[in-house]
Length: 139
Ligand code: IDP
Ligand code: MG
Image (cartoon, rainbow, N blue to C red):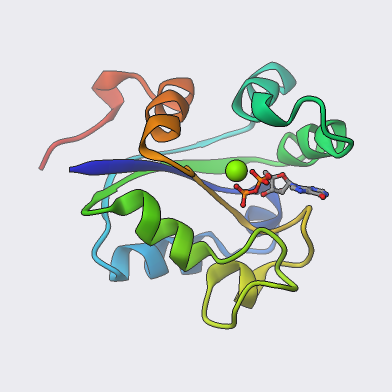
């Protein structure tokens, strides 16, 4: 079964949207197999977003994701990566469709409420940043 790493980002935690976002994903049939709340330090944030390290928004992104706690989740399901990306909507909430999480709750491209892995390969790498094997449940 496919796995994806989801982060409920700092802006969503600050605004009390964690439950709403998790409910949307669970209601779609995605299975919660790991979950933790954590306050990222800058080193882990830089590792998670390493692919963007040369972008002009990188330092702002690291500051934002470390500005408040986040919730990290592993969801499991058929085509979980693609299903979650679809439910998230486009990166920029102004362009994301109504009915998607970013379309409905995102404030701007820097505060777009949720991260979801963009490929099965990336999911495998991201999961290792946030979880050890004994934190992932089978049921
Ligand atoms: P994604 O989250 O939809 O996969 P990416 O292009 O991988 O989008 O960018 C990662 C994150 O970096 C975005 O979710 C957003 O928080 C932030 N980001 C992307 N582009 C910009 C930008 O132009 N300005 C500020 N932040 C950005
Ligand atoms: Mg991405």
